[in-house]
Amino acid sequence: MSFLTAFFYDRVMAKTEAACLRQWRRELLAQVNGEVLEIGAGTGANITLYSERVSRLTLTEPDRHMRRQLEEKIANHDPQRLGVSEGNAENIVAEDESFDYVVTSLVCCSVNDLDASLREVKRVLKPGGGLVFLEHVAAPEGTSRRRWQNRINPIWKIFMGNCHLNRETENAIIEQGFEITRIERESMCNAPPIVRPTIRGIAIKPRPPR
Image (cartoon, rainbow, N blue to C red; front, side, top):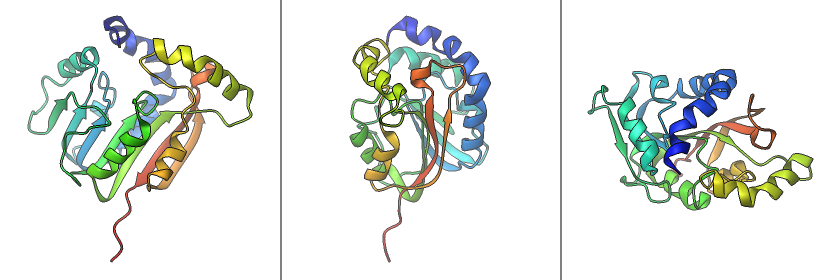
């Protein structure tokens, strides 16, 4: 991602954040606690929404321009409770079963390998731990919006930091063995029509059978 894209990202997203995303983030993160990993934390839109019940928050952001802004935002936070890593979703630097929750928001669209990323999420989650997700996704098959997503996607991902318009993230989560316990599908307000379809919710890593 270019310096300019990272620099203007918060301003570009401001109206959409105010219209819906901020509230969606707040509702999802209210139930997060314990040891938490946020993948692709960007410029830190979620930071102030985590409760005191989060004992340790690890933020990963591979893009150096985004990470610089993220580090500036957390400069005055307790370093024992909050840390930043440059790791990527396909190769999370953490021990197996390290986290109670893993959070993704508007990230799954742009990882290089979604299946590999979800396998890593599952690896670092404790049994019974939760993947909290808020993602824009592919429109339903056969719709005009999906056809436009498919047409535009090859160019879109080049100029938008590898963002894929037509990823079927819900199916990918299920295929990796997660149990989705909550999901909501809604249109993202004040966003271009091709990125409006979203899903948000929680998927649990099953506990091993006794």
